Image (cartoon, rainbow, N blue to C red; front, side):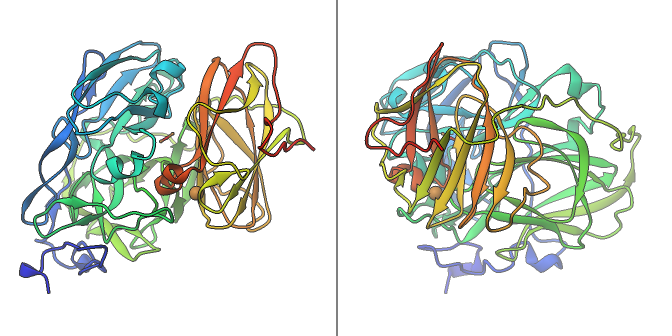
Length: 462
Ligand code: C2O
Ligand code: CU
C-alpha cells in the first residue's frame, strides 16, 4: 500500500524489494549509477550534515551526507603523500571520521575517544605509506556509529601507487567504485534507521546512493572497486548469468595472482577489486546478491567499441610480502553473543593488552553465537592463515592483505599480524550494531614489550 508503488520500505518492511532493478526486464527503468569524479585528498574539506538527497525513489528526501553526497566524494590519495583533510561537524551530535583501511597514527585514526562536538571541525593529517588499495571512510563515535553510517555517512577512499599504475588496469570511466549497502527509506524519500543490538537489515539495496542503478557499458574491460558499506548485511555477489569475476585485489590491495570466481561472499567493510571483460556483452547482465535475491546493478551494453589496452591478468600482478610467524596463537579473541569480546564489553579508555611493535603475532578468533561477525582490526593489515571448524578452509578471496574478515559460526580463524606504528588501536565487530553494543576493545602497540589480556579479560595464550 505505498503511494505510487515507489521502491521504498517503511519500518523495515521490504515493500517491492524482492526485485529492485525491474527483475532484469525493464530496460527503461532505473537510475543511472552515480559515479562521482574522485577528488584529491589534500586540502579537502568534508562537511557532515543533513542535506537533501535523491535516492532514486521519485522523491527528494534527506540523509546525513558528506559534502551533500551519500556516499560522500570518492577521495584519492597517492601512497607516500601526507594529505590533510578537514572534517566539519554540521550534525547535531559528536562525530569522528575513521579512514577504514588506512594505517595511520592513533590521533588521526578517528577513534571513538577522538569524537568532536557538533559545530566544530577537525583536521586529519594522514601519512599514507601503504600499498594501493580501496578503503573507505565513515564515522566512529561511540554508541552512534551505526546510526550515523546507516543515515548516510560513508564514502570510498582510493590509495594509488606506481606498482599498480604499471599494470594498466581499466581506468577513468572504466574504473567504477561500487559502494553497496541496504537501507530503509520512508515515504518522503528520507533514510531511516531502526537497528538494534542484533543488527539492521534494510529493505532495499542502494549502490552509490541510489535505488535500481544501471550502468551503460561499452565493449571494454571494467574495473569495479566494491565495498560492502552495509551496517549488518552480508552480500553474496554474483552475476545473473554466472559469468566469472576476476578478483585482482582485496582490502589491502593487489593479490599476487588474479582469481576467477563466480560468487563472492562480502562481509561488512570488506573490499573487492574486480576486473570484468565486457567486450562480448550483447544483452544486459545484472550484479546480484544471491542471499536476498536483489539486483544490485544492471549493466546495459551500448555495443560501442572503444580503444583500450586489455589488461594482462594471467601473470603475477604483485609481490605480496608473506608474514612468517608462530604456529600457535598467543592470543585468542572470543566473539560471544553480540555485546562483548572475551566476555568484556567495550569501555572507552580501557586498554585490554599490549603488543610489541614490529613483532609478528598469531591471533585466533572464535565465534560463540550471533554470527557472522565481520572482525576488523585498526592499525595494521594482516593475513589469514587458517579457518577451522565450519568450512574448514580459507575462502578463495582471502589470500592477500586484509583488515576485515568474516568470522562464521563455530569457527576459529587464525591470522598473522604485525604492527609497525606504536599507539592505541581497536579490534571490533564491523556489524555496526554489535560494535555499538560493546563488541569492541582497545589495545596498545608499544616499543619493546607486550602483555597478555589484563585481568577480567581472558588470556588466550596456549
Ligand atoms: Cu570501519 Cu573501526 O571501523
Ligand atoms: Cu558481531
